[in-house]
Amino acid sequence: MMNSLKNLLNKLVPGIFGKKKHIKLGLYGPPNAGKSTLANKICKDWLGEEREMSSVSAIPHETREVKVQENISIKKKGKQLSFNLIDTPGIATKIDYEDFLKHKMNKKVAKERAKEATKGVIEAIKWLDNMDCVIVVLDSTINPYSQVNITIIGNLAARNIPVLIAANKTDLKKANIKGIEAAFPQYPVIGISAEKGTNVDELYETLFSVIKR
Image (cartoon, rainbow, N blue to C red; front, side, top):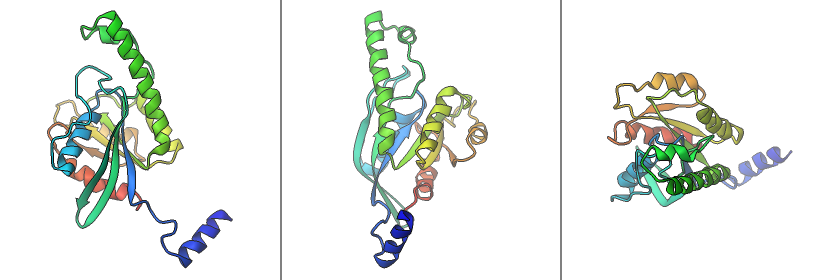
């Protein structure tokens, strides 16, 4: 009955329940997939200046808290998409301080980093309830059939959030975009290199079709 009422009102007063003009676009994925690199690339392309949202590092969980860049507008072929970009910590099903010891951290620092990373994952999951669309950034050189990836996709599907998958690091020899397409056929997959900027324009263009406006 509620949907019928909404449809009737939309016919009488077009746009009363229209699409949002400004959305929240989240970047999600496992650690070291390239989320922050992509976030920084988006800011550089559309804010007209170098503006790093997050630090980039080979050490996992470099981003340990949600970072927000407001008021970004993408313009392609006469269309415009305005959004707040949310770069989230890498999602992990297990965070062990011993993993950080491999990167020459002392035990105290490693334990603190693991604690912050765990808190960041919890925060990132909570932010899902605020997302209008999510770009899932996956490392195309790694087998996509992981517990972490399935958990991320499962959470997005349960919330019925529009998803675009960025198969990152296509500049590397082991890149396998088809593997990611086979793992998650329900979503569009665009192969990119966030670091080199390869095919990022196609990612932007695909966003318009993913986000129902």
